[in-house]
Image (spheres, rainbow, N blue to C red):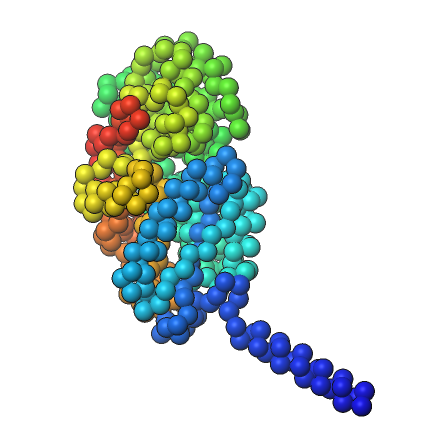
Length: 389
């Protein structure tokens, strides 16, 4: 009797293991077959961004853009007739949080692809895990180190900081500046873009009269601004993330330096504008997106976004929207959720029309072919020029 009972218990355990193994992992499966899988199964795409912590505002904009893309796709019939479902994971705005979030989301969910945030240092921290997993990943980062990455499954909806650095330097020249002070972040953005600007300055005959790197998590920028004030500069460049960008604009406003100022993309984002306390007025910025863009289909998308969410989109809204759209277009075109098919489609891109840019593969992860020079008027960034590759 005991032997029979033991055999029955083993049989039940084996049946349970088989049943669990045949199901989807975590929130579901992507089908995992070249023909697109079972049409009743959703296709899962991961989205990693900050939903808590100091950078949570960025995550809110990212989620709005990603959700908008998902809803449009599903209302149009999904991908290969299958529903698209976004799975979100909080990276808490830190490098450690990012690597933990990536490992958690891929281990708990059977994802077809994953979208990563705009913070290049965090994307670079995740890169080794992205490479090992082999899952198609599109980030919104712009570091020169992402541009030079050889990870075949990593892409970006942005132009590289090498291109943006040249645009910033050229705009200084356009403004007639000859002696420029540079204040930059200690992260991949600041340390990658600054040398590009300096090299372009040499070609243009512009002198970098002061180059300062501020401390990690810096909150008091008055000492740096004092050095800039003593440099005799006729213009200022700021390279920083959103929170620091707002504080830099505020500190320069309080110092009353009265010279033209131009920043990287973060200076035109709403978090920076709000943090500046009104000191952002008049600043220029080189950015991947502007909520006042008038070219189509961007202008119509902006109007739809404002109607849906009651506020203007930010750069990360548009970048994440495009990332989700690119993945879905790849799967629809290839009729497949296989990683190699999605990656192949992304490396075949030639003028795909998105909200931020027309996307083309040029041999690097950076798919974007355009960016904007904007000027902040009050609390709105207005397009001055669109720069196309």
